[in-house]
Length: 278
Image 1 (cartoon, rainbow, N blue to C red):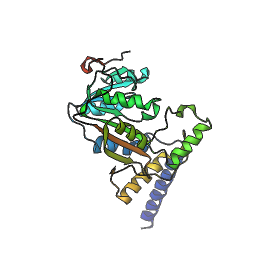
Image 2 (tube, rainbow, N blue to C red):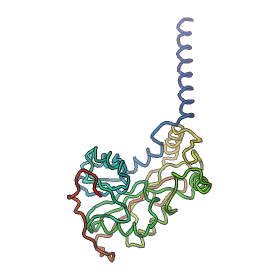
Image 3 (cartoon, rainbow, N blue to C red):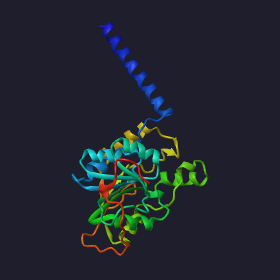
Image 4 (spheres, one colour):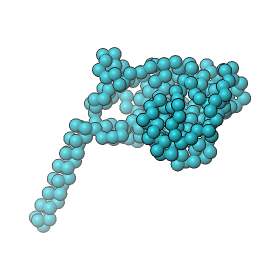
């Protein structure tokens, strides 16, 4: 009996020791990917519906990870980005991509059912131009799906202060528009907010300053899951929640809308090869 008890004690000791070692490693070098992606991905692929054959433009597609997930759902997706190295990686995954910017889309009017812009809205120096271009390439009844951050959160305020101090030039932004400002710009262009998804209910925690983690990534992942489970708050909300750090928004183009923007003839969607073009 005593021998059996000693074995159990030894096993418990080793489990606690291994767990503490893992937690120490997590503190020193937080794991990847960031916990932030968990709820954003859940909103994009579990809450938002994607139809087979739906024509989607992924603005800022990077190396094509989201394109690949859409392709697996039989979505007809095209990606654009300015990073040619990332585009080469996307092309290697059999994604249709080309080098272009979201404020001057090389596509004819009414080419897509959906324009997806995930984690790229802050990069555009002329938001009004981007809204006009997104609207132009959408078919009547089409939608824009975009993500943005809660600029009023303590986390965002600390990041902004760090940027003003010039600690990390890689975190620069070209505009400081939040979810309400972007939604208003689309509304001014004759579009309507169809759905809002409030993600990452981490207010008032500041878990990171630029690239330096204060609270380890895995700890934050557990915390956000606990908050969502405890509050039972649905991800889709009637308005952007102040406790959320990130939002995904669906904006609809009216089915019978008549564009007042300049029409443009450009690359047909089916004319894009599985390679990078200029």
